[in-house]
Length: 244
Image (cartoon, rainbow, N blue to C red):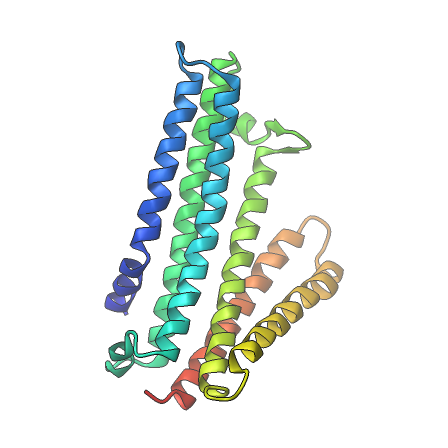
């Protein structure tokens, strides 16, 4: 399993390096905007926007790249040797799911820490001194830093679940609909149906059952359960129906 995970991590390393390069460039611009001779509010705001966009689109592209690779592997001869190794479909798909989850988690932690440090430097420049507890309560517009962190984590978790739903739709297309007319279109419709069901249950059931103040926790648990179910269903189809 560890070898499969390393293999999956290597396949997405270019995107991660690309993200780090852009992050480094925007971070340098941000620090220059805070520095003495280059002190500039527009420069700082531009760098902040660049960092946010890099984080958001970087995480999105990582997930989409993973989906694209699975589609190519199941519908072409690309990486066909992978499915001829003495590994079960649960291990192969599990490595992909684990890689995507770890990549999103590492990206989330990295950008959260970077964001805290940048905010701390900005406050120091403005002469505001806060401890960690006060920094978490610091207001950012209509909300605070802690709430922004929780919302970002929920979005990452929801995106991870969406990716596992896309895995399942692609596997359905490759195992049950492969070769049929309009199979790709049907897989898109299946994905839309799975996603609609996931969102619909979340909006109807979780909002009614979750106690006040615990909606985020219930939503997180629900997202993880759905991701696991999507993974198990996809692995079962690959194990029983996939012909290499």
